[in-house]
Image 1: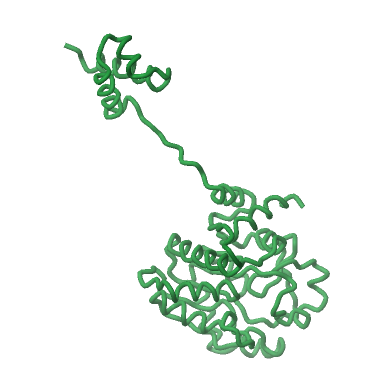
Image 2: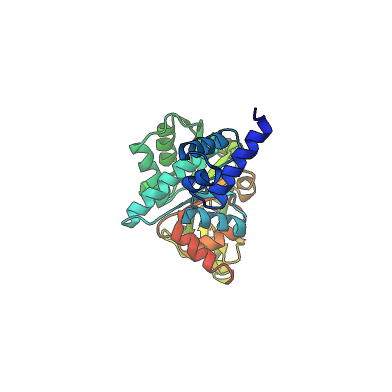
Amino acid sequence: MENKQEKLCRLADVARRYYLEDCTQSEIAKALGVSRPLISRMLSEARKLGVVTITVQEPRSDSRSLLDQLCQKSGIRDGVLVEDGASNNGTNRLLAEGIVRLLKQLRSRCLGVGWGYLIGQLVTCLQQEPQKDSTITDVCPLIGSASIPARNYQSNEIVRLMAEQFGAVPHFLYLPALPENLEEKQVLCSTEVYHQIMEQWKRIDTAVVNIGDYPSSPDFASLVRYGSLLQQEHACGRLLIYYVSAQGTVIRSDRDFAVQIPLEILKQCPNIIGVCSANTTVSAFRGALRTGIFSHIVARSELARAALASAGE
């Protein structure tokens, strides 16, 4: 009677002929003097007993490969890359959906959000597909509100609408993003309203930060806040309304009176997602990545590809 070891050896012999030597089942059956159905049963048994293990290598998508390269080059941990839509609006919709997927993946709870066109598109996306089962419990703005009427720059309205769709608690910042001057900012930052939002900023575990261009529209009083410093330091982009150089330095000015989360506190956030709209330029994206601030990105695949191609510049 055939013992277990002999049986396994027979199965291994058949499996080697079939999988490694490219013999057909009929050829193996003829060589061993058995029927072809028996060879078929033996191959099935070989898989069942672990004599044969089959591994399928799924083809990696181009966007995943790009993202892996971006992680290696820039130090980000992960993100979402999307292909271009039929129009800029279509692309921004895909990017907004990517942000939602990433927030789910991260199981974010306390969320801080910036502003801009793409984050406005994110609000629209959430209104069309509410995420009431989200893990997000709190939402707060990372920057005060702008004086322009566009909803994309009304931080408290963005937060209110997002919190509603997430089933979360909104936290508001009743201060302008751009006070009249540095003295007014100092007064505003001494108020209880500011101290409360500061405590909320310290609690966020995820920040969604807009990456934009320089020069930008709106201009965000860049000349008054920085004088000629942005030109001298070769500003190429911005995050929130901080400006960054091509080398990845966040340009600081003693005259800056913007009300937004201090960088020192932002950097303490575990997950900082940089989001790029359909129009974000390669130079702005590359400069933002070089700051080392971001842990994740959401961007167009083509933007990532262009940034990698020019990484040596």
